[in-house]
Structure formats: C-alpha cells, structure tokens
Image 1 (spheres, rainbow, N blue to C red):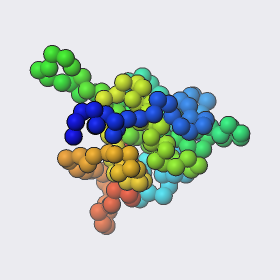
Image 2: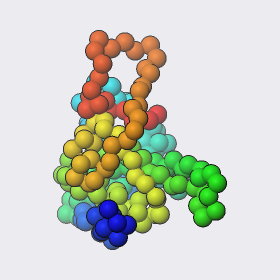
Image 3: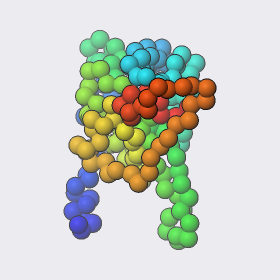
Image 4: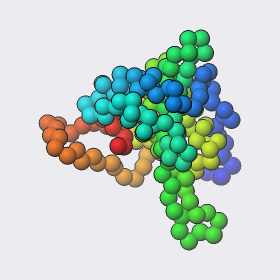
Length: 181
C-alpha cells in the first residue's frame, strides 16, 4: 500500500464529533468517580476507585494522562468518559526522531455515546496533541471498537500477576476491568 493511500485510510476528522465532549476538570471528579464505579462493578477484577484515586490517576496532567468526558448540553450531566495515558519511547540511532510519543487507552465509560464514537473522539484529541501512535488493550469492552477504528493486533500478550489473589479459572480479557495501577 502506498503512503498516500495509508494516510487517506487512517485520516481522522479535525475535531471530535460528540456534543459536550470536553477535557475533564477538578470539578468533575465526583461525577467521573460515580461513572467509573458503576461501570467497573461488572468486571471480575477491577480497581475500587474513590474520588482521591480518580483525582490522582485520571485528572489530566500534560504528558502523563489525558481525560475527557461528555457533558449533556441540556442537563449538564456527565454521561461518558474516556482517557489515555502517555508512554514515550526513545528512538535510538535516528537523526530525525528521538522519541515516539505513544498514547494508551486507559479507562473509558460509554453510557449515552457509543464507545466507538467516544474512542474516535479520543483518537482525534491524541492526534491534535501530536501523539505518534494510539494503543488499546482488548480488555473491558474495547474489543467492540478495535476493528472498526482500524487498530492492528499487537505482537505480544499482557499478563497480570495478582498478589494474594486466587482465581478458579483464567479470565477472558472482557472480564478484566483493570488497565494499569
């Protein structure tokens, strides 16, 4: 495939499509905590986040974590949430590039906005912030958007070691509500 065809195939819109999509602020911590707690309760293994955790782990910080939400224009209710964290990698022996800026999908909650649309908005924001690549694990409900948003499969597997936690059966990725902590 030519480079120009590849660029056309992966082209994203210039701005997010979801009305009310905006960056998370400190005043949103309580609402985001409620959304996350309700969503993560369905998984066999998930963090039990309180407001202090959400403020620490998910409140946006440049070059660390980006979090966005959807606030209903009519009711001002926070209905959806998406986030990604930054993991830069050094590029060795290249005169033009020294760092690969990678975004990793973090926690996402879609109650009114389809997860595919919410994730597409996150991709747009990451592109506007000059990320080079956007990665997502196949945990939680992420499998629902990977193909449609043209994510390619990775070449490795992620294995979790849970100290002092015994499982009767191995978990499927869709049963896991844990990304990173």
